[in-house]
Length: 195
Image 1: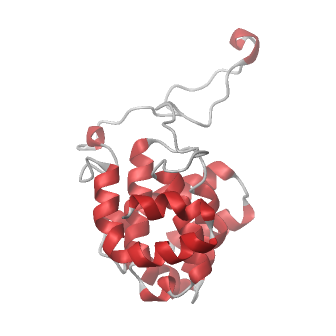
Image 2: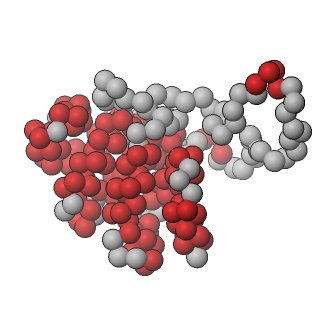
């Protein structure tokens, strides 16, 4: 399946950009589809794969700078994923994802979730004024598409990230985060946010 191909590429390529794109795509799928679709797809490939991906790929990506729309889908996907009993039972995983939530919601003092420019993040600045750069075919990298609804963003159903996150996370993780925050000071901002 396509998911198996992506997972193989993810394993062979340690590119942070590919990992980021993978997490955002999976988050969008989790956010816009019924709750068990993404976990079921991963569990069909291998039992425990989702928890492994959340620990080894998702958590580092959540610490990267992301655009507001990307942060919205990541937060809302985490809400759906953390509602699964099999994941909530793994305290270490929940703690790591909560640290990611602190970053995504810009709650921490050292949060790197600040807004990133809307331009492409995989293009470097041309050195020497662009002299000596090879010609790039104009259709090679599309910046805009005319797809219906594309202008609304990845999560048009989430106008206010903080309000949506608080409403979804408080009943789900309120008490758990309070307990985790006692042992992990980096979760204090999330505990305060969910009060």
